[in-house]
Length: 260
Image (cartoon, rainbow, N blue to C red; front, side, top):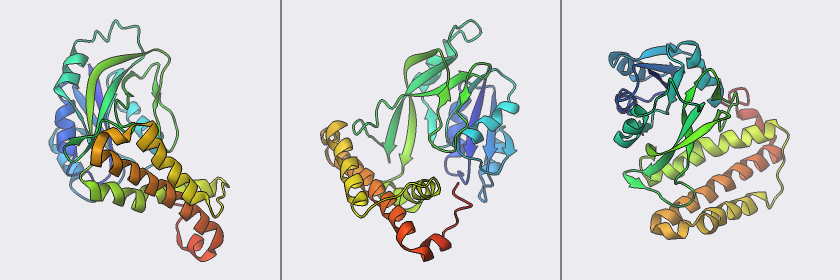
């Protein structure tokens, strides 16, 4: 028996598909919602999910909230924009979880732009642990880039699908609107400082890492686009950090109490 775990905020366009994919292997679904103003909660409830209301605490901390509400020791945690594939479901159903020596299982992740599977730039296999025993594993209690911490992990040969971005416009909009601003605030809060060349150098490094080292050049236009978006995100992150240092009016107008 497996409990599904999803954290949400305004995911009305994703939550139905996510829950339905989890139901292939889960006998209960726990949705931890951080204040959705759309129909996320209504849809989740109509599909039989148990909804827990919790203001956002940060990535790993939020995902661990469900552990106090699950009925099973095995939890499958996915994001609202991810889907359990038929292949993944078949693999999970063959596991003898009551007898296994493993604490957790990892899966490959197919990151998508629209319906296009991005296989280069470090976007695949992008292996991640998602199925774990709560008696011996859990997400790290951190506010960003959380992962499941477990001692004995088995890598399974099946994929989870991640609808990362709906289109190229969203690929560039999210880093500019959300990712870079949050990262800059975190760095500034921690006392990290940038110099005048930091935006350029970090942006260039990000592009070369994705396009050359991670072989984005093999991905054609999409490989170049993903590499460029990574450069833009890195450039903006350090440009915003530098702006916080140089312009007190910007620092004052941004809400550092609400980074998350």
